[in-house]
Image (cartoon, rainbow, N blue to C red):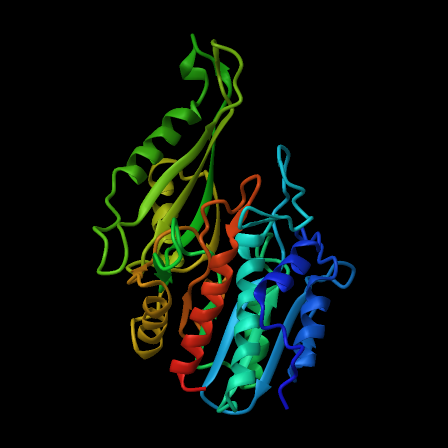
Length: 381
């Protein structure tokens, strides 16, 4: 039977979460707090610590109901360090002039609280037809190696993958209802080190200047237009982020030169194909150079369909705005979910995320809860 103590108001839950100093990799009780609320609502709760035994990443998975349709709310309970200069205690969850302040309220403890409150309201109003789950990690703001990625793989092994996943990241730039993310660009970093032979600039025939070859590499790489964009994605972008020689002298040819670059790429590319291109380009100009590449995520797209349209309709119904379907911005844990099931992102306004005095208007917590509830009702649960 429905419990009148279900957490149907997102504000008290959000404030309790904000008071947990869960700066990555710490959890400080955030997930235990949520586990207690979810168990009270009838969820089966799993604590899933992955990673090194001496410092595992805290993860939480909870599920209620059986069968399909199956909807998962995903997110994270960790936050970035608050930094200096706050006028409100970043972990006191202060309410002032209609705003709730605290590190992580926008990114994304507020979204987590709204999803739990919306589920609580749904369970009080409706018999459940299908299943609802939550996937929460404590390592989204950190290396993200032992969080959502192994949890979603664990669900695949158990044959519990949802039909659709809604990630509550702060997708809206200025007002609730601006934007739904239906994809993200891929991201990769490369470091190129060209070795040479140190020598005196007056005797270049006795040295081998690596800077010249590195510049040729970079000119070749930056001179290529990767693509002109697609229906849902902007053009892919290669940006050189650093060129370093470490040479304090004006009359010395350095022994080595290095550069770093980042590529944000759309779904016309894969990380592997771009890696091959970088390595081949470097080899043409500097065969003995070393190239280290790290791919932090592949591009993905959830083609707009029934679930995305239901989410858009819920946003319109509550806010009066028609959200833009977008794929811009940085990476998120949706990149780990997309290979397993359709995923979209919609959360609070992110204008103050990662900034001092991070805050949201309290009214948006209520509105986001109503959007999530309306979406669940339209989803067919």
